Length: 279
Image (cartoon, rainbow, N blue to C red; front, side, top):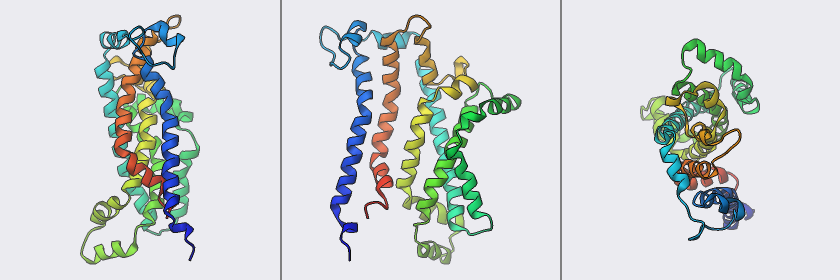
């Protein structure tokens, strides 16, 4: 029997590589945060240096709190992101369960059809999406963004979750059916807990693009009362003058929720990525 498949060094190496990649990815975040606590001249003079007694300044955060409606923008982004992730995970998991569990004519074609959304960017249909939102009266509402982001994230969710759900033991599901569990109870009580790492992976992969998106908020919800945090931060960027202190401070505050959620889901994310690769 080959011992390579069961070698714990493979798992350690995979986790080490993921941690290294994470640190590399977080370096730009570190630069943004430290520069948000500096005065303007220090940002351009020594961008990689930590703020000291001479360069330390909170002018950027003070500007963010005084201009615009930062807390409203934050609330809108939070509502859109959480609601979109909820619908992506719910509908994506249900569709993945149906494709993985039930064999029917057109099963493969349905899976390929859903996977097309991964290859074709949703921004190609921006004009048609805007026309649909205008005709339904959803322009300048948070529901417009939630619906678009849900449609955007479903193909990847179905693609990832269906592969994990095929690995769930058929004996476990059949035992549940023998005990009288309905298909809904089998799905929610037996299957979902076993694919939790995959769910966390899908959530993280969709959370960051939704939170940081500027394209659809600018087109579908530009009104002041429904602006997201990313769109609201653009008030500090002018055609001729940019308040870099305020921009970096707004970005630093916008990054915090994503970092917190990433830390919460990090262990499940690593398990979801390495599952099947380091058995």
